[in-house]
Image 1 (cartoon, one colour):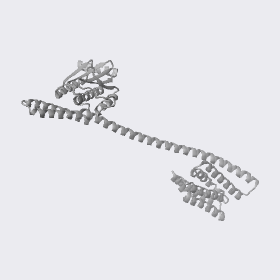
Image 2 (cartoon, one colour):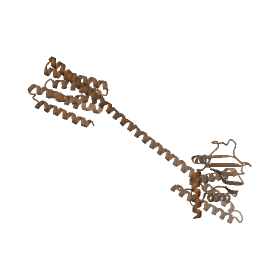
Image 3 (cartoon, helix red, strand yellow):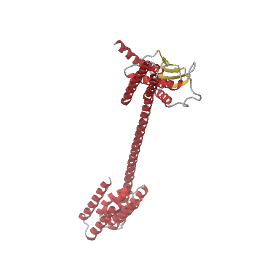
Image 4 (cartoon, rainbow, N blue to C red):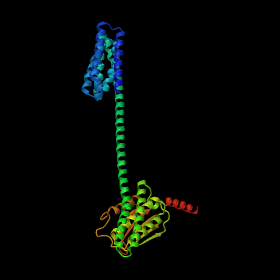
Length: 402
């Protein structure tokens, strides 16, 4: 932008010099007028131009002093030097940061120009009346135009500043969302690994230990083979879970099976691995949204894992029921119960806290406490969207009829 100011100013200086030369100025008048124009040009190159870029107010004032004096001096010799006023008034407003100083500089320029014209025309009653009046009109117009230009420029600068702040805020928000997304994805992967792979590996270790123990017993070969078969099945399931996790698919047990089939197989496998009595009970549950099925499956996996590690139970029951627009999953055992001081957030490990967070994200709640006849019961409650569930139920019915 400043480059165009430079070009325009140089063009005005050249046009002024040419107009003075062709306008009839000769000898000393031509020489002094051209010297004044040249002095203004040199002052702009040394002070005015750099001040326009750096906003150095001392350099701007020094340049404008030369402009005021040079314009008045040129007008004492040639009326064609009045072309300089176009650039001079504009520079009073462009270079000074304070409007008050711009008004003062404009008034000084108008006074210098008036004196220059009066010196050239003579101090007669007519000129002393006409010249100040004409220059006063020019001054009012210049100040009004300068105020409007200054207001426009400041509005433009404010707009540019607001745009920069908005872009900075958008960038910060994007970075925040990205960081939150990364953190959420890390937490999701951590929960998935804990709920699937870690528990599968725990099962493999326990089955391997059990297989080693029965090898030393007479007739233990068949029992060892049974344990090895369970190890193989668990390892294959873990491999499927790992592949589904990497590909961000639904849990492997739900890819080709319903939730009821997946939970039934989970409970049966748990009973085979631990030797506990394990039951799966279903009461009035039809098709559920996929998101709810994933949450319920993970809760059942974590609940059974806690029974395996901590309960010391002889029996466990997984019950899936539906009451109106709420589905409940209960995992209860007849074990030793909860330790003393256990409560919400107290004594909970990563598994329970992650399970509670997973259920809360689905809009439900999770509770854990003593069972009605001893042991521990874990209950997850999930609200369901009736309209969505009816649509899924109708689609499932039509699929079965087809």
